[in-house]
Image 1 (spheres, helix red, strand yellow):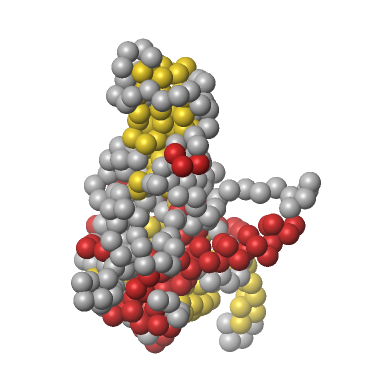
Image 2 (image 1 turned 60 degrees about the vertical axis):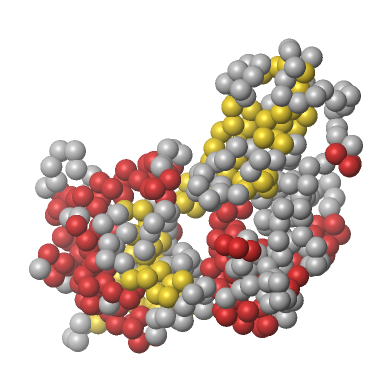
Amino acid sequence: MGVHVIKLPDVGEGVAEAELVEWSVEVGDVVAEDDIIGAVMTDKATVEIPSPVQGTISWLGAEIGDTVIVGADLIKIEVLGEGNQQAEPAQIEPAPDAAQPALPEVPAATNPIVPPTNTAPQGQQLAVSEGGKVLASPAVRKRGVFLNLDLSKFKGTGPDGIITHEDLDRHLLSQQSSRVAMTSYEKSVDAETTQVKVIGLRRKIAEQMSRAKSRIPHITYVEEIDVTELEGLRQNLNASREEGQPKLSLLPFLMRAMVLAIKDQPGINAHYDDENGIIHQHKSINIGIAAQTDNGLMVPVVRNVQNLGLWNSADEILRLADAARNNTAKREELSGSTITITSLGKMGGIVTTPVINHPEVAIIGVNKMETKPFWDGGKFVPRQMMNLSSSFDHRVVDGWDAAVFIQRIKSLLEKPLLIFS
């Protein structure tokens, strides 16, 4: 009998590690060639790992939620013949000193961080130059000083070992997770307590939200909009729609209004590279539509909205939402947004404080629509009203500019024929 070792393969360009999100096998299981043995998740996609051989599972190198480095041993299979590694004495659990250095134990809601020591794992370099200077951008240095962090003890994950904001984020998340574990879980675990490990998409969402809130100073601007005329137009268009056309929701009208408002303020349709202090203004308007799925919040992207009409936008929204919910959305359909819309539909509440989808600089939040009494100067009349609760990156978008942008959208939605001018 021999041993065949499966290592974590290269799962994407520029990807150095992946999170193990699923095992399809257990120790002792017999697998055939091409059977799926597990799945890993990167920032870009979930990748299934097939078995290249037939044999019996003898060792699993990680637990669900662990982060595995590309090239690390992932699984061992006993096979007929020599295998690709010399057989070891039979054992179910590896000895403590046999644990793979590439599989550190990870707190439930964080990526592995570098312990604050002056030594780095083999093959890794601390982000310090030969002269002892910390390799980090001025923004990262300033943030490190503010947080009272010794950057010389961090391992940078950026190019050439440069310390990035993500490295600081992981450190802060780890500290927070450790405090919660000590003050909450360990003291309160009892027969009625259920501990749920945060893995996969849920962990990615948690990391993205933490990154956005820790790095972006949000300003939220709320405006009430009279959508009575818009609702009348929408209902008339839906009543006369052609066969095969989807029903128009509010979103295609809002998207069209955003396109016109962005023409006046192109700086809203942008990404802010705070590492290098550069704002990237985009000509293409790619609107992310936050959609709740069984697997968590996903943001499919409607691309080049500036070239789409109402019906085309509605088609794309429906297609992408279905793909996200069915877990069939492609990688490029879930990335590349330049500005985002978030809406809870009828459950949208009166006011929300949306979190910006980093590195974007704005997010438009749609609240629920209600019929309210409105004073027209002589009497109260029933009107359909709705709030927009929108957040902006206050580092690059002033409060005045945020208000002007939303007021422009308000004027277009309240007089919807202007959308077609």
